[in-house]
Image (cartoon, rainbow, N blue to C red; front, side, top):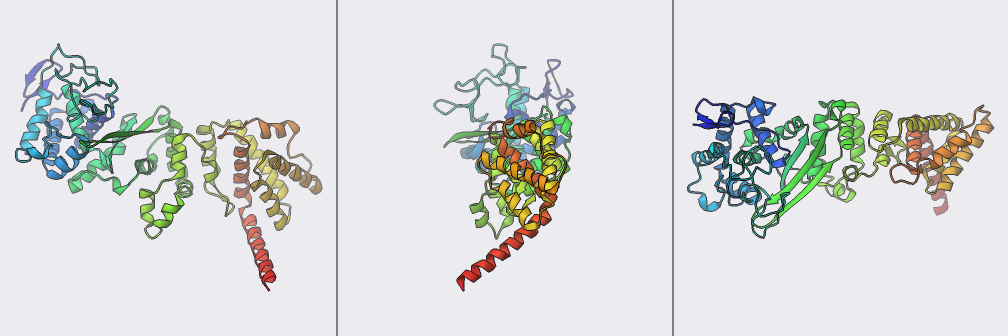
Length: 471
């Protein structure tokens, strides 16, 4: 079997394999990931001619099966594909050998200088005729919606990029739509799609992503798992984008879910430094109705239910309240994780964070001298502060407590008081309510046992009072 040596411009049975490179396109990069994972290689330049042939053999054997051709490729990605012979009418002619011949034929196609440059890789001339959605997902044809950047009917794509797109189904995850996780640095893609190849080797069917129904839930699950292996310092310029699409004769739809870099680094940090804390935070976000409905099958909750923590992280909203269990007056994670989130995701200055922590410690120093019942009531004033003036009043009362106990230094200076009330503005992410949550976090961290004891005593008193009223 010959594979054209594109470096030397000759055809030779002993020639090296074509040189594939990362293109930045999710579908071709996913195809390259498939080649690397099947060959056990980490970089495109390490691929050999034998690696390509083995990957083609593996793919052709699977694609010839009805479960892949009609039930997956034709139904979800490449309708009526002539290359992969996915149209149901081609069933009698569809064999591993025929598909293999088509795939290797792409690599042996000679470039025509009359054709435009490939719109994906920019390195080779495209095929003479535009490529349509039957061979490359979502590029459109006729009146069908077109998701390709050029916005025209079909796309100018070279045979090598087209070949990579045919390998893409091997690492795609099959949910209700097709999921591709596109990441940079590209080594991240290997980690995210390795599971897909492993599933195929076990069942010879496309990976169902552990039966997750929501792509973002699966992504966060995967990110938490591989986060322990990621060095935070090397993720400074990392990015992840989910492409969740369907491309068949009935519909062409795509949802693009972008994972902000600070969120990526935060989840990786949580996985390495406080995985239990991160699990506690996530558990607070599950949709209550869905979680209640699946209470007898708790393992299904992460797969099927929406999660407010994930949604807010993706939309740039604060998840600070989820670090705290207000009902049980305890923290869900370590101060270290909270500090990383505030500085890296919310953008709170580290100096400001330490200042707020210091104020919280002085509050604790004061209120811990109160008896349990008064301690609980004093902290409840802070918990129930919904207006700025209520927040201000809490500090005034604590200052009076300090004076009564003869604590020598003031809780804070006038300038500090003004700073904590106004310097963070009314931004949704960094406002006085953010300061309030940070104070409560530190107070709960230090005084949880006493606060819970007081809460239990208050509940018992209320219960006795209610029983007396009934009598």
